[in-house]
Amino acid sequence: DAKTTQPPSMDCAEGRAANLPCNHSTISGNEYVYWYRQIHSQGPQYIIHGLKNNETNEMASLIITEDRKSSTLILPHATLRDTAVYYCIVRVATTGNQFYFGTGTSLTVIP
Amino acid sequence: GAGVSQSPSNKVTEKGKDVELRCDPISGHTALYWYRQSLGQGLEFLIYFQGNSAPDKSGLPSDRFSAERTGGSVSTLTIQRTQQEDSAVYLCASILVQDRPEAFFGQGTRLTVV
Image (cartoon, rainbow over all chains, first blue to last red):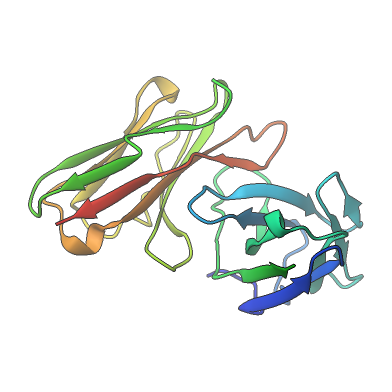
């Protein structure tokens, strides 16, 4: 039901860009791509979302392929505090739709 | 309040007892979700409330689980006759669907059934 696939784990050196991939090959035309992260023992935190165009905010950038079947979350300068589980979710951005959280990618930022 | 508030933050209960978990969503948010997360696992959807519509209960694992949302605001998740497999972190999220579609999560209630 998660509709997305992500690698289970990744490492990234502190200060380098972290690029987290996500495949969503069955995405529908009205489904957005959302990214959340969950730092240990905390509730998930919204990062960014997009439909077709690439998006950037103060936390990250989201690159969506032209066919929308995959996307990449980019943390431009990873810090130790970015160590977390990152969830990629597809969802219609209207009422009545669940957020299906898969198992996510466990990102470890290495000093 | 500034965010989604859940209480209690921790709850230890004996097997067979009933428990109530509370969620205070962000004021004005129309939709509210309950999830649970077992140790080392992803989030499992439980139930969803949207305005005055009938809740989506499709994720509730058994009839021991129920939830209410009174006055379109505070929600209570009730687990009757708790079992050890109910031990998990129960997370609540609220969303302002008309404006910003991202969900805001509380810090969760850690339930331990002994």
